Length: 171
Length: 111
Image (cartoon, rainbow over all chains, first blue to last red; front, side):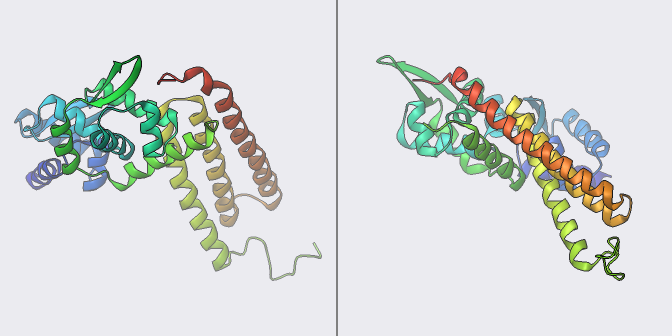
């Protein structure tokens, strides 16, 4: 039992920002068991929980709230691609970013909305045109380096890219 | 039924049939999982229709699996499979039609 808790704590520390069901799957444990041990770990401040878009993500206590929200979004391949383009090219218009990443405008707008909501990207207007910019480039680059999306996360992301592409009228 | 040789009872499961049904069911279950996850993420009608179409695809595999298991007879099997084809096609057409009719109204990023 203590073994399970140690295992869970180590897994959260190795994979910061994983959500509840991903932890259950990765460790092959019953949801009730995971819930019980996570609650104990939370009480001892060994892990921190953060609710985001209907999912509870778990982190080592070292991350601040901005980093916690960032880590949850950086598990999405397309959000990563958008940030990489913006880090590389600097502030850019949405049309340019969509073209660079190779995604439909609806895909970009979905990811941009969340990146803006969580303070990773800001919308700036200069000379009458709106541009997207990374708010904390150094911190974002460091976090991008730290984590990678899992296979199911990548598949869901690519599936939405494909469907957006198929359903969006060309142009 | 004179055209069915006696040894080829439709319920006799041959290894290739069993393999195809198994692979088909696993594959369509993965697709359905992706479709549902994408719908949960996006919450749009187009994604709902795509998820439902993938559910119909999975139901097709389920009907095949139940037929192999002998729970569905040949006549019902044909009726169900072809009805599901109609449902699947209708859902995909609806998803495409709906996307075309709503997209222009919700371009909130620039130009």
